Amino acid sequence: MPHSSPAPALPSGASAPAFAMHPGYRRMFAPDRLTVGIFLPLRFYQGDMAVLQGQADLVADIDRRGFAAAWVRDVPLFDPSFGDAGQVFDPFSYLAYLAARTERVALATGSAVFPLRHPIDLAKAAATLDQLSGGRLVMGIASGDRPVEFPAYGLDPAQRGDRFAQTVSYFRQLMQAPHGAIDSPLGRLAGPQLLPKPSAGRVPLLITGSCRQTPQWVGEHADGWLTYPDSTHDDAGPQRLAQKIRSWRALIPDAGFRPHATNEWLDLSADPDHPRTPMQGGYVLRTGRRGLLDLLARWQAAGVNHAALGIQFSERPPAEVIQELAEEVLPHFPSHDGVAPAPARW
Picture 1: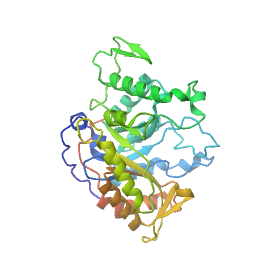
Picture 2 (picture 1 turned 30 degrees about the vertical axis):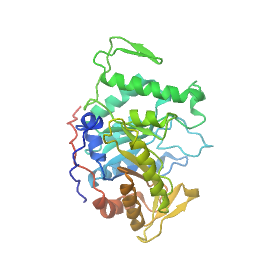
Picture 3 (picture 1 turned 135 degrees about the vertical axis):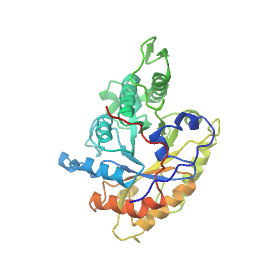
Picture 4 (picture 1 turned 60 degrees about the horizontal axis):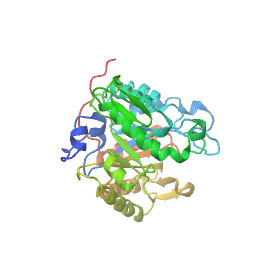
């Protein structure tokens, strides 16, 4: 079983004091280092919920084997024309269930669609999950991209950029305001407070892509940045990704550390020397473990701090893929010991 590594001390800056004692953040992120997480579902939903049976047992194994994070997506409505149901379950409900089945692994959303929900409901769900998990929640957040979602919620998709920024502000004020005094286009609050508060004071928000904001806004407001990786079958993709990460970090006002995360849908071949090969129009990468190790090393050199690997398209059984990743990949990219989760005996 791979061992976690001590997390290097975070440099000074706004992110360091905010998340220095956050168990989920510290397990996933440290400067100049890359960790590995697993994206759920472990098998692709094609109309039969039975494909998800036993998944929580495998997530418990992911936790025991030392992966940094388990990720879930937020897909409120299944659109058959879009062709991807995500991980099917509501992300907050399911992560709360997984919190009870795990001990150390960070629990991450990738990504919660912020404009679709009121910030009070988002903050209540997030703070509850953070407390139930002992401080392991890390939130990737997004502005939404599925055509059916905004009309179904009675919202104007053209306004989702403004609503995203307003929701982020309101959400953070709910988490931090000692007396709940908030004046926002999304609501006014003078007196009532949000309970519970997050166990470490804040929940990290990783902005996904641009979320229809300016690069300067993302640099100023993101606790971290989650982006698509560019091409993964050649060396040019990591080089372009490195430039994108450098450009973003140059916009961080205090020049403090902010983590970058990316992901790839992976079909891990049993042949360790299988070359990195794009499949399904580049949506899935088929590779052996040596090609994966090379890719992860290039990502780390590019400034990536966490790689979330989705294995639902793999031809091999998920338990077999998890075992190979744990035994052959995690020793090179171990999770950080960081801060132990708070006791959560609710």
